Amino acid sequence: MQRELFEQFDEEKVVCGTDEAGRGPLAGPVVAAAVILPPDFPVEILNDSKKMSEKDRVEAEIIIKEKATAWAVSAISHKTIDKINILNSSLLGMKKSYEKIRDRGYNVTILLCDGNKTPDVDCPVEAIVKGDSKVPEIMAASILAKNHRDRLMDIADKKWPEYGFAHHKGYPTKEHYKALSLYGPCPIHRLSFRLEEKKSKREEELF
Image (cartoon, rainbow, N blue to C red):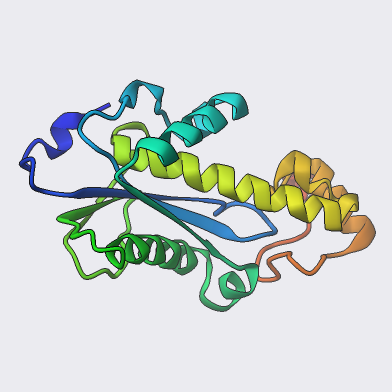
Protein backbone atom coordinates (compact mmCIF):
# COMPACT_ATOMS: atom_id res chain seq x y z
CA MET A 1 0.00 0.00 0.00
CA GLN A 2 1.24 3.44 -0.86
CA ARG A 3 0.44 6.01 1.79
CA GLU A 4 3.16 8.11 0.14
CA LEU A 5 0.72 8.75 -2.72
CA PHE A 6 -0.99 11.33 -0.59
CA GLU A 7 1.62 12.41 1.93
CA GLN A 8 1.26 15.81 0.26
CA PHE A 9 -1.97 16.31 2.23
CA ASP A 10 -1.77 17.62 5.77
CA GLU A 11 -3.96 16.44 8.63
CA GLU A 12 -6.69 18.95 7.79
CA LYS A 13 -7.09 17.63 4.25
CA VAL A 14 -9.80 15.09 3.48
CA VAL A 15 -8.98 12.29 1.03
CA CYS A 16 -11.87 10.28 -0.38
CA GLY A 17 -11.36 7.09 -2.39
CA THR A 18 -13.84 5.65 -4.87
CA ASP A 19 -14.11 2.46 -6.91
CA GLU A 20 -16.71 0.36 -8.70
CA ALA A 21 -17.66 -3.30 -9.03
CA GLY A 22 -19.50 -4.93 -11.90
CA ARG A 23 -18.25 -3.47 -15.15
CA GLY A 24 -17.81 -6.87 -16.77
CA PRO A 25 -21.05 -8.76 -15.98
CA LEU A 26 -23.81 -9.35 -18.50
CA ALA A 27 -26.53 -8.62 -15.96
CA GLY A 28 -27.32 -6.47 -12.96
CA PRO A 29 -26.14 -3.04 -11.87
CA VAL A 30 -22.70 -1.56 -11.61
CA VAL A 31 -22.06 -0.48 -8.02
CA ALA A 32 -19.68 2.23 -6.83
CA ALA A 33 -18.59 3.24 -3.34
CA ALA A 34 -16.73 6.16 -1.81
CA VAL A 35 -14.85 6.09 1.50
CA ILE A 36 -13.00 8.49 3.79
CA LEU A 37 -10.75 6.77 6.33
CA PRO A 38 -9.38 8.17 9.60
CA PRO A 39 -5.59 8.23 10.18
CA ASP A 40 -5.80 5.34 12.68
CA PHE A 41 -7.73 2.98 10.40
CA PRO A 42 -6.28 -0.58 10.41
CA VAL A 43 -5.20 -0.57 6.75
CA GLU A 44 -3.70 -4.06 7.08
CA ILE A 45 -7.19 -5.54 6.66
CA LEU A 46 -7.54 -3.97 3.20
CA ASN A 47 -6.67 -5.28 -0.24
CA ASP A 48 -7.98 -5.26 -3.78
CA SER A 49 -11.43 -6.81 -3.29
CA LYS A 50 -10.85 -9.17 -6.24
CA LYS A 51 -7.93 -10.73 -4.37
CA MET A 52 -9.85 -11.32 -1.14
CA SER A 53 -11.98 -14.26 -0.11
CA GLU A 54 -15.66 -13.59 0.50
CA LYS A 55 -15.12 -14.19 4.23
CA ASP A 56 -12.28 -11.65 4.41
CA ARG A 57 -14.25 -9.09 2.38
CA VAL A 58 -17.28 -9.37 4.65
CA GLU A 59 -15.14 -9.06 7.79
CA ALA A 60 -13.37 -6.02 6.32
CA GLU A 61 -16.70 -4.47 5.33
CA ILE A 62 -17.92 -4.60 8.93
CA ILE A 63 -14.81 -2.77 10.13
CA ILE A 64 -14.93 -0.23 7.28
CA LYS A 65 -18.53 0.68 8.05
CA GLU A 66 -17.78 0.87 11.77
CA LYS A 67 -14.53 2.86 11.65
CA ALA A 68 -14.60 4.89 8.41
CA THR A 69 -15.05 8.63 8.75
CA ALA A 70 -17.66 8.40 6.00
CA TRP A 71 -18.79 5.92 3.36
CA ALA A 72 -21.47 5.68 0.68
CA VAL A 73 -22.60 3.20 -1.96
CA SER A 74 -24.53 3.79 -5.21
CA ALA A 75 -25.98 1.28 -7.69
CA ILE A 76 -26.53 2.21 -11.34
CA SER A 77 -29.13 0.02 -13.00
CA HIS A 78 -28.79 -2.16 -16.07
CA LYS A 79 -31.26 0.17 -17.80
CA THR A 80 -28.98 3.15 -17.30
CA ILE A 81 -25.99 1.07 -18.44
CA ASP A 82 -27.85 0.30 -21.67
CA LYS A 83 -28.59 4.00 -22.16
CA ILE A 84 -25.24 5.64 -21.38
CA ASN A 85 -22.78 2.68 -21.56
CA ILE A 86 -20.86 0.95 -18.80
CA LEU A 87 -17.97 3.43 -18.52
CA ASN A 88 -20.27 6.41 -18.06
CA SER A 89 -22.41 4.39 -15.65
CA SER A 90 -19.36 3.50 -13.56
CA LEU A 91 -18.29 7.14 -13.41
CA LEU A 92 -21.86 8.16 -12.54
CA GLY A 93 -21.85 5.71 -9.64
CA MET A 94 -18.57 7.15 -8.36
CA LYS A 95 -19.96 10.67 -8.66
CA LYS A 96 -23.16 9.79 -6.81
CA SER A 97 -21.24 8.08 -3.99
CA TYR A 98 -18.92 11.07 -3.60
CA GLU A 99 -21.90 13.45 -3.58
CA LYS A 100 -23.62 11.45 -0.85
CA ILE A 101 -20.55 12.00 1.33
CA ARG A 102 -20.24 15.66 0.32
CA ASP A 103 -23.91 16.27 1.11
CA ARG A 104 -23.36 15.00 4.65
CA GLY A 105 -21.05 17.97 5.18
CA TYR A 106 -17.63 16.53 4.38
CA ASN A 107 -15.42 18.93 2.45
CA VAL A 108 -13.36 16.54 0.33
CA THR A 109 -9.95 17.91 -0.61
CA ILE A 110 -9.30 15.34 -3.33
CA LEU A 111 -11.17 12.38 -4.76
CA LEU A 112 -8.94 9.44 -5.73
CA CYS A 113 -10.46 7.06 -8.30
CA ASP A 114 -9.37 3.63 -9.37
CA GLY A 115 -8.52 3.37 -13.07
CA ASN A 116 -7.63 5.95 -15.69
CA LYS A 117 -10.88 7.94 -15.96
CA THR A 118 -12.42 10.39 -13.52
CA PRO A 119 -16.02 11.39 -12.79
CA ASP A 120 -17.21 14.97 -13.20
CA VAL A 121 -17.19 16.22 -9.62
CA ASP A 122 -16.89 19.57 -7.88
CA CYS A 123 -13.56 18.87 -6.18
CA PRO A 124 -10.04 18.01 -7.36
CA VAL A 125 -9.96 14.44 -8.64
CA GLU A 126 -7.17 12.07 -9.68
CA ALA A 127 -7.31 8.68 -11.39
CA ILE A 128 -4.84 6.06 -10.12
CA VAL A 129 -4.26 2.95 -12.20
CA LYS A 130 -4.46 -0.12 -9.94
CA GLY A 131 -5.48 2.18 -7.13
CA ASP A 132 -7.49 -0.66 -5.61
CA SER A 133 -4.20 -2.33 -4.68
CA LYS A 134 -2.32 0.85 -3.72
CA VAL A 135 -4.55 3.34 -1.91
CA PRO A 136 -6.37 2.34 1.31
CA GLU A 137 -9.39 4.57 0.63
CA ILE A 138 -9.83 3.04 -2.83
CA MET A 139 -9.33 -0.47 -1.45
CA ALA A 140 -12.04 0.13 1.12
CA ALA A 141 -14.38 1.46 -1.56
CA SER A 142 -13.73 -1.58 -3.75
CA ILE A 143 -14.66 -3.89 -0.86
CA LEU A 144 -17.93 -2.08 -0.14
CA ALA A 145 -18.87 -1.96 -3.82
CA LYS A 146 -18.10 -5.63 -4.42
CA ASN A 147 -20.01 -6.86 -1.36
CA HIS A 148 -23.02 -4.67 -2.08
CA ARG A 149 -23.24 -5.84 -5.67
CA ASP A 150 -22.83 -9.50 -4.70
CA ARG A 151 -25.78 -9.18 -2.33
CA LEU A 152 -27.92 -7.62 -5.06
CA MET A 153 -27.09 -10.54 -7.34
CA ASP A 154 -27.97 -13.01 -4.58
CA ILE A 155 -31.39 -11.34 -4.42
CA ALA A 156 -31.67 -11.61 -8.21
CA ASP A 157 -30.85 -15.31 -7.94
CA LYS A 158 -33.91 -15.86 -5.78
CA LYS A 159 -36.10 -14.19 -8.40
CA TRP A 160 -34.50 -15.84 -11.45
CA PRO A 161 -32.83 -19.01 -10.10
CA GLU A 162 -32.42 -20.56 -13.53
CA TYR A 163 -29.56 -18.18 -14.37
CA GLY A 164 -27.29 -19.05 -11.43
CA PHE A 165 -26.67 -15.43 -10.41
CA ALA A 166 -25.67 -16.44 -6.86
CA HIS A 167 -22.79 -18.42 -8.32
CA HIS A 168 -21.37 -16.22 -11.09
CA LYS A 169 -22.85 -12.84 -10.04
CA GLY A 170 -23.78 -12.10 -13.65
CA TYR A 171 -20.29 -12.47 -15.10
CA PRO A 172 -19.89 -14.15 -18.52
CA THR A 173 -19.22 -17.74 -17.46
CA LYS A 174 -20.10 -20.88 -19.44
CA GLU A 175 -22.87 -21.56 -16.94
CA HIS A 176 -24.32 -18.11 -17.57
CA TYR A 177 -24.10 -18.39 -21.35
CA LYS A 178 -25.80 -21.79 -21.20
CA ALA A 179 -28.69 -20.32 -19.23
CA LEU A 180 -28.97 -17.46 -21.70
CA SER A 181 -29.11 -19.92 -24.61
CA LEU A 182 -31.91 -21.83 -22.87
CA TYR A 183 -34.00 -19.01 -21.44
CA GLY A 184 -32.92 -15.83 -23.21
CA PRO A 185 -32.29 -12.62 -21.24
CA CYS A 186 -34.17 -11.88 -18.03
CA PRO A 187 -35.33 -8.37 -16.99
CA ILE A 188 -31.93 -7.40 -15.48
CA HIS A 189 -29.69 -8.42 -18.38
CA ARG A 190 -27.72 -5.64 -20.06
CA LEU A 191 -29.12 -5.73 -23.57
CA SER A 192 -26.34 -3.51 -24.89
CA PHE A 193 -23.82 -6.25 -24.01
CA ARG A 194 -23.00 -9.31 -26.12
CA LEU A 195 -25.24 -11.93 -24.54
CA GLU A 196 -24.15 -14.91 -26.61
CA GLU A 197 -20.91 -16.80 -26.08
CA LYS A 198 -18.29 -15.87 -28.64
CA LYS A 199 -17.19 -18.84 -30.70
CA SER A 200 -13.55 -19.71 -31.06
CA LYS A 201 -11.88 -18.86 -34.35
CA ARG A 202 -11.87 -22.57 -35.26
CA GLU A 203 -15.59 -22.86 -34.56
CA GLU A 204 -16.29 -19.80 -36.69
CA GLU A 205 -14.41 -21.37 -39.61
CA LEU A 206 -16.74 -24.38 -39.49
CA PHE A 207 -19.86 -22.29 -40.12
